[in-house]
Amino acid sequence: MVLSALSRTCKHDVFPSFHGKDVRRGFLSCLLKEFKEKAIDVFIDNDIERSKLIGSELKEAIRGSVIAIVLISRNYASSTWCLNELVEIMRCRDEHKQTVGVIFYEVDPSDVKKQKGDFGAVFDKTCVEKSTEEVERWRQALQIVAQLAGYDTSYYDDDAAMIEKIVTDVSNKLNGSTTSNDSDSLVGIETHIRKMESLLSLKSDEVRMVGIWGPAGIGKTTIARALYGELSSKFAHAAFIESIKGKFEQNYRDAHAFKLHLQEQLLCKTLNLKDLKVDHLGVAKARLENKKVLVVLDDVEELKQLEAMTDQTCWFGLQSRIIITTEDKKLLVGHGINHIYQVKFPSKSDALKILCLSAFRQKSPSSGFEDMAVEVTRLAGNLPLGLSVFGAYLRGMSKDQWINALPRLRTSLDGKIEKVLRFSYDALCEEDQELFLHIACFFKGGGVSHVVECLAESRLNVNHGLQVLFEKCFISIHEWGWLVVHNLLEQLAKDIVRKQSVSNPGKRQFLVDARDICNVLEENAILTYRRSGKT
Picture 1 (cartoon, rainbow, N blue to C red):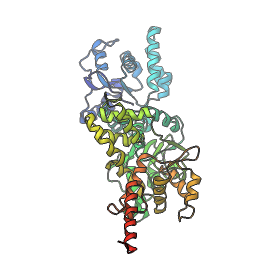
Picture 2 (spheres, rainbow, N blue to C red):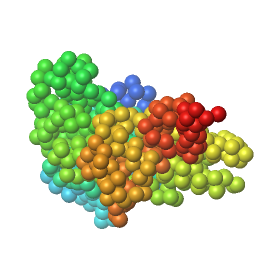
Picture 3 (cartoon, rainbow, N blue to C red):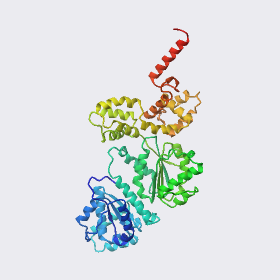
Picture 4 (cartoon, rainbow, N blue to C red):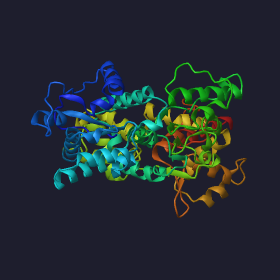
């Protein structure tokens, strides 16, 4: 169930379409009670006189609701009122982009789509002596609604679990129903989602793990969140587990305790439980192996984290999907994940839109800022994090203030960007850190063979280190063998070297700034001259 921002003002949050005798006293009353507790306004038609045709008042109520929920039960098709409601709801979905959710209550979606079984028998009885045109409208509406992502009672242990899932999803959709004017996540997100859906192969019964791989700040989490928001309602249980990076084994009593904690987190979020205690590592499989789940593990950096939370596909029920975001491709391959989506840098035009959304609250530069916006986009190296941070920094500034700010952006790394990139750098081993600093400061744009040759006499294992840096997204390699380092990572490397000795450049590992080089050479020349005894 995907929520679109509606251009009109809505009077109600939810319009429910249902057959009262099937669900009113049980399931529906519990659902409405939960909606009320969440302050979700539901249209109730108690005061509207029912007839064969739905009147203007009911049509207005359907159009005036953010979400229409169709609760299809065994006898839903026995009511021409319900069927005509459904036709109107499908029309609003097509013409007004209204969000439609469907609940299959003790009925098979396939029976609804094909009008067969008990549901089909009821429908056929209703169609007696009805016009061909009217029956065809009902059939088309049933076929369409049956193919929507919905909630099926056969996937849930009980009604309470399904109601909790529905209410949570509706609440989340309503909370996110307005378009964020300064969010870079809207630019190009649909393309990412479509490509990920292809990798996920949602119609397949297999349990599938899919990785989202790319450098820090590229938008992996943004893509995963958007995907989760679109797909979570298709699963009986879903969980987005964020910021797994930083949860290290050394913070726990031993490796066993570390894995138990991660499994507790997985189960609590996936099954919506509180204070669950896991006392052995077989609990996750035992609780989830018969459940269709969607799990997103965000920002994973160690294989042990994956092994603790998603060791094997047999831990999960059929049609389950596990999505892992990481900066380390080797981690995904090592876990046997063959379906990997590499998040690439946005195009120049999309990068400019991301910057402008952050800086100007619109997708294009304000008049007079065009050239400077293009330069800032270049300085950010098209990295979404950099574009968003730079845009926020420049937001509200005059043209003269932009001109004055550009020199700082050319030479300094913003603190927010540095924090994200530095975390990834610190996770490298000492040898790989040193190789990265050499490449970023001296060999950017150089050939791989040239780097290997120049560092042949060093203690560094260059070939292995290059592979590690590539898999962890610190470098990329052009098809012609050139080493590519992102602008912001290059700036990070230079800042790391500079901070080794801010006041005395001569004590740094190496020098990269022309002024520092001149100053150190001049000081050394003076010292040499003095030591020679000359005056």
